Length: 155
Image (cartoon, rainbow, N blue to C red; front, side, top):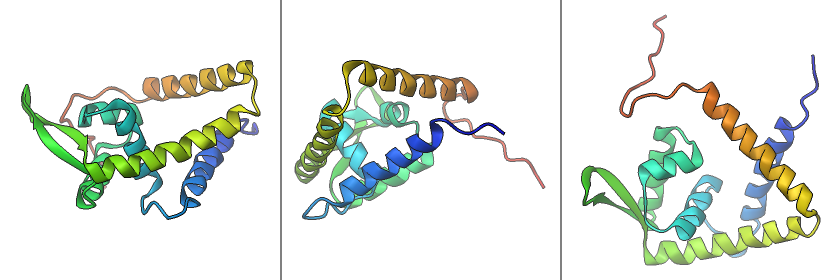
């Protein structure tokens, strides 16, 4: 059996980012996934659910759960898109924008502290490695038509 060289480190790094977000005072009151969605919306602006799905590679049900919770907290709202009323646009509310700004500043501080310890080649190598991971994942999962469901084998 080969020893895993980076997968566990990626997992631990993701967990550590969550711990870094949890340590903020006053507490954010968000899950790590919710925090990342707010930070993304702050950077990207109004975004479709489809674009969020592509950006985060969440299962659709997971993304819907996050959106439901963020909407219940009045941090985002979903509106029908004028060009296609079957799809929705996600917008930050005023409260959501303020909290997203706190999240983003916290993540900026983490990134800045890490970048101080890395050279340009390290950052480039890390980015290349993460892009390769995403590419392998995309290739490993067959594309499904929108709206199609995964078939569950009968037992």
